Length: 370
Image 1 (cartoon, rainbow, N blue to C red):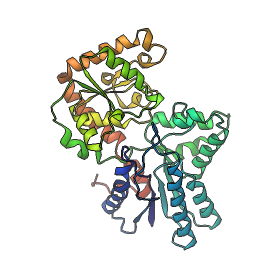
Image 2: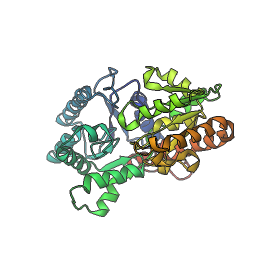
Image 3: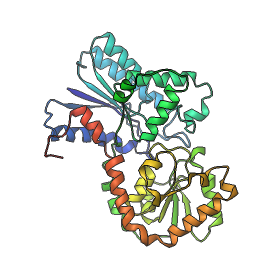
Image 4: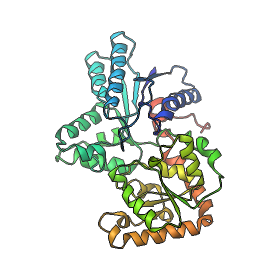
């Protein structure tokens, strides 16, 4: 059996760089651990050039289509040359990939049944995402997302919050019925394949801390960077850095994480939240609103009432409450170091390791080997 990995293009400021090498290696290691000598991992790349994301976005809105079209061409050639066999599996590391439709077309019309997996990051079903904000006529995107979901055998999400939002906004918005058993079978949660993160960041742990508060998110409206800048003006006793203002290398970014005391989220859109986990690994305390994916990932220690960071309440008392919370964490930083270390272990195990995905693709780990 071949497992084809349809990867994401490499953007230096995103985790897609690490995923290019990590996911094939992770699958290969997992196959060996399960004694799956019949499995061959094949990576389908659309090019090796590192691309710059569209400002504020996850990927480049134009170049991502060039990349995905290159991948589709390769997949079509594999079918035409008879190299794809029944039972082979395809893992799309981004579900918003039109090649899924063409793959399903070839698989069914050529009678070569394959298994398709896809990882959902975001889409037009999220009103705070770029697709949700910029695309006004969502009839075509809603039907595209619905078609992708049906074409895929296993749709993977990183949080239950994301699963619920997808169902409500993709299948609920037009009042369409969906078989409950099919929904449960095809909509699954797995940790994202980021097993490497703790090891990557480990040598940044133990750096001397500064009175530093970081905004590590994209410069997009749903992340509310202007709210962060306003807090910085009102609390000049601390150092505040918006990471994407600095054009940092990965090493420079990780060093700032290691020196920071707080990683602050004011986000209106978050289906996982990688940067807050990165901060926790190096003992930077995450401070997040009690909404979105954060609700299931963090206990009350690390959350503040979501209303404080809304456009409505922030200028009407929310700002002052946030400032009190930030000051408490900054002035009492040492009290919570052990707790944040435990938090990082919990997040790694439940949200940043892809065990359920690996088990579905390759079968479970033999008993006694876990």
